[in-house]
Length: 269
Image 1: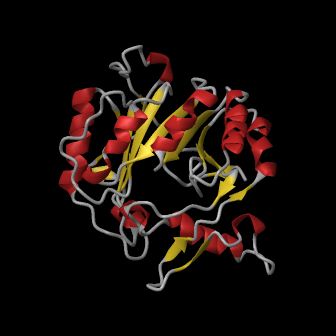
Image 2: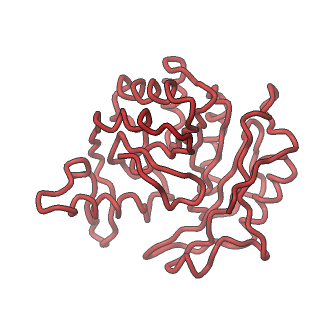
Protein backbone atom coordinates (compact mmCIF):
# COMPACT_ATOMS: atom_id res chain seq x y z
CA UNK A 1 0.00 0.00 0.00
CA UNK A 2 1.01 3.64 -0.33
CA UNK A 3 2.02 5.30 2.90
CA UNK A 4 4.12 8.02 4.44
CA UNK A 5 7.81 7.23 4.51
CA UNK A 6 10.73 7.69 6.86
CA UNK A 7 13.12 7.50 3.89
CA UNK A 8 14.80 10.89 3.82
CA UNK A 9 14.67 11.52 0.08
CA UNK A 10 11.02 10.68 -0.54
CA UNK A 11 7.61 11.46 0.94
CA UNK A 12 5.69 8.24 0.43
CA UNK A 13 6.15 4.66 -0.72
CA UNK A 14 3.96 2.69 -3.10
CA UNK A 15 4.37 -1.07 -3.38
CA UNK A 16 2.29 -2.76 -6.08
CA UNK A 17 4.96 -5.50 -6.10
CA UNK A 18 6.45 -7.42 -3.16
CA UNK A 19 9.52 -9.63 -3.19
CA UNK A 20 12.88 -9.69 -4.92
CA UNK A 21 16.07 -11.72 -5.49
CA UNK A 22 19.59 -10.73 -4.36
CA UNK A 23 21.57 -9.64 -7.38
CA UNK A 24 24.73 -7.84 -6.18
CA UNK A 25 26.73 -7.08 -2.98
CA UNK A 26 24.46 -4.17 -2.05
CA UNK A 27 21.73 -6.72 -1.30
CA UNK A 28 23.62 -8.41 1.54
CA UNK A 29 21.85 -6.58 4.39
CA UNK A 30 18.65 -5.67 2.57
CA UNK A 31 16.31 -3.70 4.83
CA UNK A 32 13.34 -4.65 2.64
CA UNK A 33 13.91 -8.36 3.26
CA UNK A 34 13.90 -7.72 7.02
CA UNK A 35 10.74 -5.67 6.70
CA UNK A 36 9.02 -8.30 4.52
CA UNK A 37 9.57 -10.94 7.20
CA UNK A 38 8.12 -8.59 9.80
CA UNK A 39 5.09 -7.73 7.69
CA UNK A 40 4.34 -11.39 7.04
CA UNK A 41 4.09 -11.89 10.80
CA UNK A 42 1.79 -8.91 11.42
CA UNK A 43 -1.27 -11.09 11.91
CA UNK A 44 -1.76 -14.70 12.91
CA UNK A 45 -2.42 -15.65 9.33
CA UNK A 46 0.42 -13.51 8.05
CA UNK A 47 0.32 -10.63 5.58
CA UNK A 48 -0.56 -12.30 2.28
CA UNK A 49 1.19 -9.65 0.20
CA UNK A 50 4.57 -10.60 1.64
CA UNK A 51 3.94 -14.29 2.22
CA UNK A 52 6.92 -16.38 1.17
CA UNK A 53 8.93 -13.45 -0.16
CA UNK A 54 11.70 -13.57 2.48
CA UNK A 55 13.35 -16.00 4.87
CA UNK A 56 16.39 -16.29 7.10
CA UNK A 57 19.50 -17.58 5.40
CA UNK A 58 21.82 -20.08 7.10
CA UNK A 59 23.89 -17.19 8.44
CA UNK A 60 20.79 -15.71 10.06
CA UNK A 61 20.42 -12.76 7.69
CA UNK A 62 16.99 -12.04 6.22
CA UNK A 63 17.06 -12.63 2.46
CA UNK A 64 14.54 -12.45 -0.35
CA UNK A 65 13.55 -15.85 -1.72
CA UNK A 66 12.82 -14.80 -5.30
CA UNK A 67 9.06 -15.11 -4.89
CA UNK A 68 7.19 -12.17 -6.41
CA UNK A 69 3.67 -11.20 -5.31
CA UNK A 70 1.62 -8.72 -7.32
CA UNK A 71 -0.82 -6.41 -5.54
CA UNK A 72 -3.45 -5.34 -8.06
CA UNK A 73 -5.46 -3.54 -5.37
CA UNK A 74 -2.52 -1.22 -4.69
CA UNK A 75 -2.47 0.02 -8.28
CA UNK A 76 -5.28 2.51 -7.64
CA UNK A 77 -3.82 4.15 -4.55
CA UNK A 78 -1.86 7.05 -6.13
CA UNK A 79 -5.01 8.19 -7.89
CA UNK A 80 -6.61 8.76 -4.49
CA UNK A 81 -3.83 11.11 -3.40
CA UNK A 82 -4.91 14.51 -4.63
CA UNK A 83 -2.01 16.41 -3.09
CA UNK A 84 1.18 15.90 -5.07
CA UNK A 85 4.15 14.25 -3.43
CA UNK A 86 7.34 12.37 -4.22
CA UNK A 87 6.59 8.64 -4.24
CA UNK A 88 9.22 5.91 -4.09
CA UNK A 89 7.90 3.10 -6.29
CA UNK A 90 8.44 -0.41 -4.93
CA UNK A 91 10.59 0.23 -1.90
CA UNK A 92 9.91 -3.45 -1.09
CA UNK A 93 10.78 -4.89 -4.49
CA UNK A 94 12.15 -4.07 -7.93
CA UNK A 95 9.60 -3.15 -10.59
CA UNK A 96 11.94 -4.55 -13.26
CA UNK A 97 12.57 -7.90 -11.62
CA UNK A 98 12.47 -10.58 -14.31
CA UNK A 99 9.42 -12.23 -12.72
CA UNK A 100 7.26 -9.11 -12.80
CA UNK A 101 5.14 -9.53 -15.95
CA UNK A 102 5.64 -6.85 -18.60
CA UNK A 103 1.89 -6.26 -18.66
CA UNK A 104 1.94 -5.46 -14.94
CA UNK A 105 4.85 -3.06 -15.44
CA UNK A 106 2.76 -1.28 -18.06
CA UNK A 107 -0.17 -1.05 -15.63
CA UNK A 108 2.11 0.64 -13.10
CA UNK A 109 3.26 3.10 -15.76
CA UNK A 110 -0.35 3.79 -16.73
CA UNK A 111 -1.06 4.89 -13.17
CA UNK A 112 2.04 7.10 -13.08
CA UNK A 113 1.09 8.63 -16.44
CA UNK A 114 -2.39 9.42 -15.12
CA UNK A 115 -1.19 11.05 -11.88
CA UNK A 116 0.78 14.14 -12.98
CA UNK A 117 0.41 15.67 -9.51
CA UNK A 118 3.02 13.21 -8.19
CA UNK A 119 6.69 12.64 -8.87
CA UNK A 120 7.38 8.90 -9.05
CA UNK A 121 10.88 7.73 -8.11
CA UNK A 122 11.51 4.33 -9.70
CA UNK A 123 14.72 2.63 -8.55
CA UNK A 124 16.11 -0.60 -9.98
CA UNK A 125 19.18 -2.80 -9.89
CA UNK A 126 18.03 -4.16 -13.26
CA UNK A 127 18.32 -1.26 -15.72
CA UNK A 128 18.79 -3.70 -18.61
CA UNK A 129 15.21 -4.89 -18.25
CA UNK A 130 14.00 -1.32 -17.76
CA UNK A 131 15.63 -0.43 -21.06
CA UNK A 132 14.16 -3.49 -22.77
CA UNK A 133 10.66 -2.36 -21.76
CA UNK A 134 11.26 1.37 -22.21
CA UNK A 135 9.72 1.58 -25.69
CA UNK A 136 6.50 -0.08 -24.53
CA UNK A 137 5.67 2.46 -21.81
CA UNK A 138 5.11 6.21 -21.70
CA UNK A 139 7.76 8.29 -19.94
CA UNK A 140 5.81 11.27 -18.68
CA UNK A 141 7.97 13.98 -17.03
CA UNK A 142 6.84 12.99 -13.53
CA UNK A 143 8.64 9.62 -13.74
CA UNK A 144 12.16 9.69 -12.34
CA UNK A 145 14.24 6.63 -13.24
CA UNK A 146 17.17 5.54 -11.09
CA UNK A 147 19.60 2.69 -10.65
CA UNK A 148 21.60 1.47 -7.65
CA UNK A 149 25.40 1.67 -7.85
CA UNK A 150 27.04 0.42 -4.66
CA UNK A 151 30.65 0.29 -5.82
CA UNK A 152 32.81 0.68 -8.93
CA UNK A 153 31.99 -2.83 -10.19
CA UNK A 154 28.42 -1.74 -10.94
CA UNK A 155 28.95 1.59 -12.67
CA UNK A 156 28.03 -0.17 -15.92
CA UNK A 157 24.41 0.22 -14.81
CA UNK A 158 24.78 3.96 -15.40
CA UNK A 159 25.57 3.39 -19.07
CA UNK A 160 22.26 1.57 -19.45
CA UNK A 161 20.37 4.18 -17.42
CA UNK A 162 21.51 6.91 -19.83
CA UNK A 163 19.65 5.16 -22.65
CA UNK A 164 16.30 5.25 -20.84
CA UNK A 165 14.19 8.26 -21.93
CA UNK A 166 13.26 9.53 -18.46
CA UNK A 167 13.42 13.29 -17.92
CA UNK A 168 15.11 12.79 -14.55
CA UNK A 169 17.71 10.02 -14.09
CA UNK A 170 19.27 9.35 -10.73
CA UNK A 171 21.71 7.12 -8.88
CA UNK A 172 21.33 5.56 -5.46
CA UNK A 173 24.80 4.91 -4.08
CA UNK A 174 23.41 3.17 -1.04
CA UNK A 175 24.75 1.23 0.59
CA UNK A 176 28.00 2.76 -0.59
CA UNK A 177 30.47 -0.07 0.03
CA UNK A 178 33.45 1.06 -2.03
CA UNK A 179 35.12 4.12 -3.56
CA UNK A 180 34.04 5.56 -6.91
CA UNK A 181 36.46 8.47 -7.46
CA UNK A 182 35.80 8.60 -11.21
CA UNK A 183 32.02 8.27 -11.18
CA UNK A 184 30.70 9.34 -14.59
CA UNK A 185 27.63 11.58 -14.26
CA UNK A 186 26.86 12.48 -17.86
CA UNK A 187 23.11 12.22 -18.33
CA UNK A 188 22.52 11.90 -14.58
CA UNK A 189 20.55 14.58 -12.71
CA UNK A 190 20.58 13.46 -9.09
CA UNK A 191 22.77 11.31 -6.83
CA UNK A 192 21.79 9.88 -3.45
CA UNK A 193 24.56 8.58 -1.18
CA UNK A 194 24.10 6.66 2.04
CA UNK A 195 25.86 4.24 4.33
CA UNK A 196 24.49 0.84 5.24
CA UNK A 197 22.49 0.60 8.46
CA UNK A 198 21.20 -2.12 10.75
CA UNK A 199 22.75 -5.36 12.06
CA UNK A 200 25.97 -6.36 10.32
CA UNK A 201 26.22 -3.05 8.44
CA UNK A 202 29.44 -2.46 6.52
CA UNK A 203 31.39 0.75 7.16
CA UNK A 204 31.52 3.64 4.68
CA UNK A 205 34.62 5.81 4.47
CA UNK A 206 34.15 9.62 4.52
CA UNK A 207 36.49 9.94 1.54
CA UNK A 208 34.14 7.85 -0.62
CA UNK A 209 31.28 10.24 0.13
CA UNK A 210 33.35 13.37 -0.43
CA UNK A 211 34.61 12.10 -3.78
CA UNK A 212 31.06 11.64 -5.08
CA UNK A 213 29.88 14.94 -3.61
CA UNK A 214 32.74 16.79 -5.28
CA UNK A 215 32.02 15.16 -8.63
CA UNK A 216 28.36 16.19 -8.32
CA UNK A 217 29.37 19.77 -7.61
CA UNK A 218 31.77 19.80 -10.56
CA UNK A 219 29.12 18.31 -12.86
CA UNK A 220 26.27 20.48 -11.56
CA UNK A 221 24.33 17.41 -10.43
CA UNK A 222 22.00 17.52 -7.41
CA UNK A 223 23.51 15.72 -4.40
CA UNK A 224 21.55 14.20 -1.51
CA UNK A 225 23.38 12.69 1.46
CA UNK A 226 21.00 10.32 3.23
CA UNK A 227 22.98 8.94 6.17
CA UNK A 228 26.29 7.71 7.53
CA UNK A 229 24.50 4.55 8.64
CA UNK A 230 25.77 2.00 11.12
CA UNK A 231 23.92 0.03 13.77
CA UNK A 232 22.70 3.30 15.35
CA UNK A 233 22.16 5.44 12.27
CA UNK A 234 20.27 8.15 14.15
CA UNK A 235 23.40 8.80 16.21
CA UNK A 236 25.73 9.09 13.21
CA UNK A 237 23.36 11.48 11.41
CA UNK A 238 23.59 12.82 7.90
CA UNK A 239 25.90 15.82 8.07
CA UNK A 240 29.12 16.15 6.11
CA UNK A 241 31.51 18.47 7.94
CA UNK A 242 28.61 20.17 9.69
CA UNK A 243 26.44 20.58 6.60
CA UNK A 244 23.41 18.64 5.37
CA UNK A 245 23.10 18.04 1.66
CA UNK A 246 19.45 17.67 0.61
CA UNK A 247 19.35 18.80 -3.00
CA UNK A 248 16.80 17.66 -5.57
CA UNK A 249 16.82 18.17 -9.33
CA UNK A 250 14.21 20.65 -10.48
CA UNK A 251 12.35 19.09 -13.43
CA UNK A 252 11.51 22.55 -14.73
CA UNK A 253 15.15 23.41 -15.42
CA UNK A 254 16.41 20.18 -16.93
CA UNK A 255 17.37 21.07 -20.49
CA UNK A 256 17.74 19.14 -23.69
CA UNK A 257 21.41 18.41 -23.14
CA UNK A 258 20.57 16.29 -20.11
CA UNK A 259 22.10 18.64 -17.54
CA UNK A 260 20.33 20.12 -14.57
CA UNK A 261 21.51 23.68 -14.98
CA UNK A 262 22.85 25.86 -12.18
CA UNK A 263 19.84 26.05 -9.89
CA UNK A 264 19.06 23.19 -7.55
CA UNK A 265 15.95 22.89 -5.42
CA UNK A 266 16.82 21.93 -1.86
CA UNK A 267 14.54 20.08 0.52
CA UNK A 268 13.22 21.72 3.64
CA UNK A 269 15.35 19.37 5.76
